[in-house]
Length: 453
Ligand code: 5AD
Ligand code: SF4
Image 1: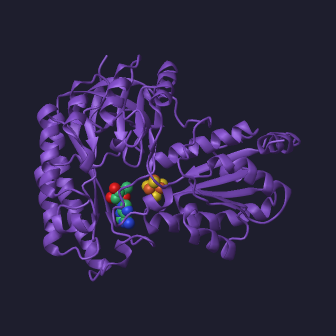
Image 2: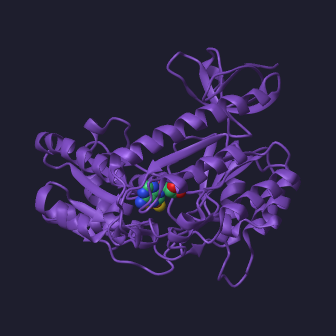
Image 3: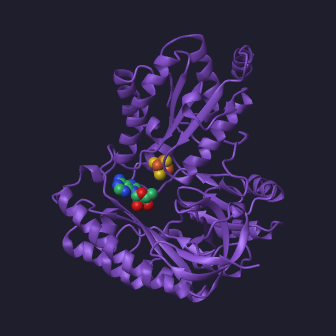
């Protein structure tokens, strides 16, 4: 019998279905993997619980991009010890990017002996076997082997929301930016076949989904090396022709593969949002070269200028790393300079975190953490000014907003086509709906508005 059926049989012997809880850390693609893991567990007979203390199977789906993400996971594993003591049959699994790093299994074996399963990013489909091993014998079940061309197709998803969804279009990364662990833990690029992507999107649309986020570590490398040779802009054209009333975003593109064709397609499309998240990382050519990014600051500016020439008012957000090894004050000031020229609507900024196995981890890094933190504060201060100023352009305008959450003051929160946070007063019934909103005020990180009839 195959492992799935064996596990199902064991679970079916329980009075009630075992409850599973999957906690995903890190990027949207990881969250999407987490939805697949929950789908697999449900196929095996589990039911999902939001309450970790009630779970019979807990899976921590981890991120390895910075040390802080890993420390959080170790902290959370530590907190699970008492749950295991209360319920010795609890199954604890660790998966995702950090699980793929070889040193993780060693550390878990040595210090967290109550963990039952470790599986890497290539081994989602092995979960039934690993569960079976755990259910039938004690000891850690591990699968962190790399599998070329592995795409987690044919795994059902339990989606967090019905009105917005992530759709993975490609996996892995070939870029080897010198700071980044991703190519080591997610392997080489492989693209899903377009028909599967279009089918998934068609089904989501028929089920009322209003926003689709195309996911990949490097989305605009989509299609490279496949026999169809269908590139990312062509995939977008086909998605745009799909029936249904939904909008489309993608994350993350790489500037070196951001072609004019891509922006032309965005400009002509009906469904693609007028916003782009285009990671810059640094404004210094010297640092960009050491990062192996494959573009200069000037090239990045050219790309943004072209994009805005075909989509006036395009909203651009970015990622920036502060304190890459050898970053001088002058390098850092060039980053501030490009921020002033582009006027990003928002930035996600990170202090450089050395990752074992990457090239940058071996580079000299004379700048102290204190100095890096001080640079980070200056960068955040500048971005606050830019955001405050640039959000004024929305005053009095109508935005299309998909509401998805409540804010602590009771307002309902959503995102506009431009990917701007929009708050409106008190109406929970708005969640999951797309509305026209007139902007009446701006608020630093968001704009405030009124829903139009
Ligand atoms: N240290 C700090 N930030 C990093 N990122 C990736 N690797 C590192 C690292 N080692 C950031 C980049 C990337 C985002 C997802 O995380 O800015 O775009
Ligand atoms: Fe984190 Fe990168 Fe893995 Fe996403 S792909 S979970 S950001 S390490």
